[in-house]
Amino acid sequence: MDTATASPEPRVRAPAAGPRRTLLATRKGRRVGVSGLVLVLAVALGLLGPLLVPYDPLAMRLESRLQPPGARLPDGHVAWLGTDQLGRDLLQQVVHGARVSMLVAASTVAIAGVSGTVLGLLAGYYGGLTDMLVMRLVDLQLAFPPLLLAILIAAMIGPSIANVVLTLSVIRWAVFARLVHGSVLSLREKEFVEAARALGGSHWRVMLGHILPNTLTPIVILATLQIALQMLAEAALSFLGLGIPHPLPSWGVTISQGRDYLQNAWWIATIPGAVMTVVVLSAGLFGDALRDYLDPRFRG
Amino acid sequence: MGRYLARRTLAALIVIWGVLTVIFLVVRVIPGDPAAVLLGTNATAEMVAEQRAKMGLERPLPVQYALFLRQAIAGDWGLSYHENRPAFAMVLERMPATLELALASIVVTVMLSFVLGTAAAHWALSPVDRAVGVLSLVGQAVPNFWLGLVLILLFARNLNWLPSFGRGSLWHLVLPTVTLSVQLIGVMTRLIRAGVLDIAGQDYVRTARAKGVPEPGVMTRHVYRNMLIPVVTMLGLQLGALLGGVVVIEMVFAWPGLGRLIVMAINNRDYPVVQAAVTFTAVIFVGLNLLVDLTYGYLDPRIRYA
Image (cartoon, rainbow over all chains, first blue to last red; front, side, top):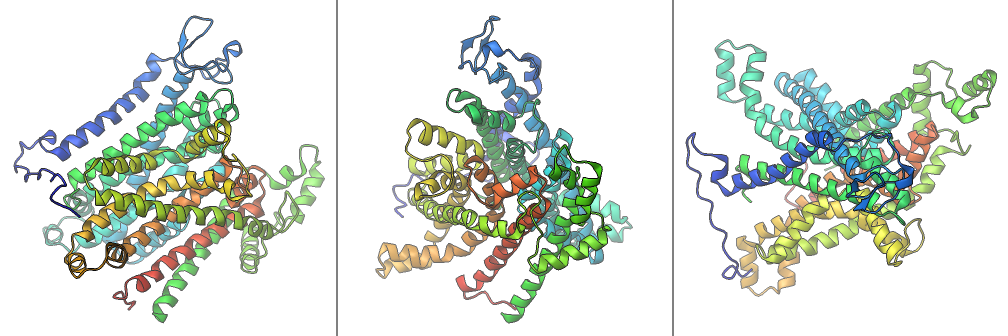
């Protein structure tokens, strides 16, 4: 490759050591900030939006059904994103869908992350039978394509928000367990762990106070990246009718219903998906930026 | 090699046994009596009881489990409650459609991501590189079922270029394949760009150019050849996402494959079909992962299985 013409990227100077190094002092840090900002906006929309845009999932206005974006409804307010087949405002559905989507993604990543981390930590630290049992369970878990397992479990326990959270937590814990298990195996042999034990630290103290803090960075990175995956999985389940039950607003449900009206009301299916793409994209970008920032092995 | 193969195959068989056990347990916990569902709302209590006995649902669970394992190994998955035909035959019937879609998707993914990844690496940091980078990120973020609907809206409904559902001609394959591949292409393109950039800077590549190897030869024999291991590993890791995606995409495009069969069978509470189809998919997944592990030695002769 012709390296002379390619504009050389300005070398990132070694960040000044010391406590005063701030997040925004480096290019990588600024990327974390910018991509995080979009995500924070989306979260704020999900949290506060429902207060600003009241929505009653059962309030139907059949006289103003399938109105295009920007239409003025008989009651005077403007449906900026149009209305659906039952006359419900699409903007309201999108905003409330954001809340469901982020609630599910955040809680499943938290549950799967914590349980996977604990199991991986126990397996890696104690070894032996615990290790064998947990890691065989991980192998078994990873032998199923995740979404297929989610579909199977969701079909078994029926659609509700709590069940979606349970299902999506079950399909992701193994990834965390495997990651933590690997790190713990190498950390367990380090001198500082040996020292902590020699000083009389209990197993719990060594695990939580010495080993866990040293595995935290990859866990945080993995968790951020999993949020985007979980949002997509929730939408796919809801789209198939196995996720969030019908009258509740979820992006997957709205898209699935808009499917029957593609011909005469394209906006019902397309707009929520476009919004979702932007939110998932910003979650992914944030995860990538965070990885580049925290993990010196990935120099982009 | 022989011992390694034996050990890996044994491990795969144990995983398959675990899969069978999980499937057996999961399906028994689904709420609703399959016998009652099969007979409909007009059935009397006696009719339901008779049907349950016929389906073996009255036996104790351990007996059902032993029976289930024996029949599973023999390929006897029982009759579909819904269609009254062998469940395994229905699965085998649907397999070619799913295989066709999955293979088409893998081929398209590999070809496109090599082209895009190489282009991005060749003109690194140029607008081309940035465009490819943005596209591959967006590709990973787009919900695939939504993309499918948008493609149907554009190319089938508005432009009328391609059929929007069903299986048949090569044209039917286009939209589902594209939809299924987009996410994978995003992942693979980034990987290949990084790989080409890394390897193109190595001394042996410079040496190859210096001794006059033509550029296509440099790329295929020296650059790509040494990237195959990460590429195959990543493909193996993404297979699970692909097989899960197939289920959703088949529902979007009414593609008559395994995924659609599974969702339909779940809606009908057709236990034997759900069991047969999910197990079959999981077994294929385990088998493909085994295959990925075994190709390493072929791709890189330095790898020896101790």
